[in-house]
Length: 150
Image (cartoon, rainbow, N blue to C red; front, side, top):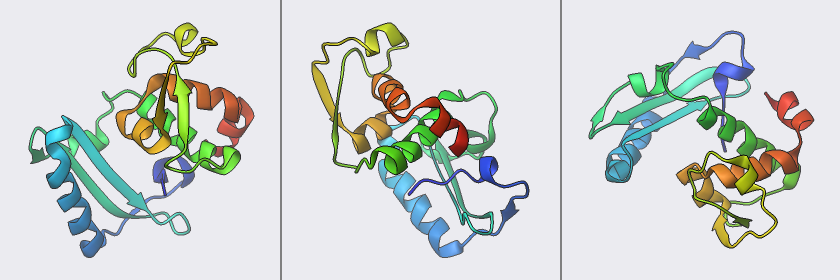
């Protein structure tokens, strides 16, 4: 399940759950060799409480990863699109999505080609931040649904 506390709540309360924080930290340590930057933020959507904030960069904890305005908003858009895809399209983590182009392509006219020749599971696409897949999902979900979720 994905949460976006800073978009949903007017007030955010930092009430870190030590048990969940240790789990998140251990996940980032175990998988940090695969990513230059990684972060896990978890919130209770009912109360707005931040339960976990774990941020990792270059083999060490670095909270600038979580709270640095220099990171592109495209990743935030992918989180919103992922949530909307689950709610609107009923996508499951193992559902496969066909796409065309490179995973990090920035050319929508290529993503939307009518001859997709590759496929990737929804969970892997999210983990790799697959631009063509999330561009396609955003169109399938529709701008109104994305706007309402945002």
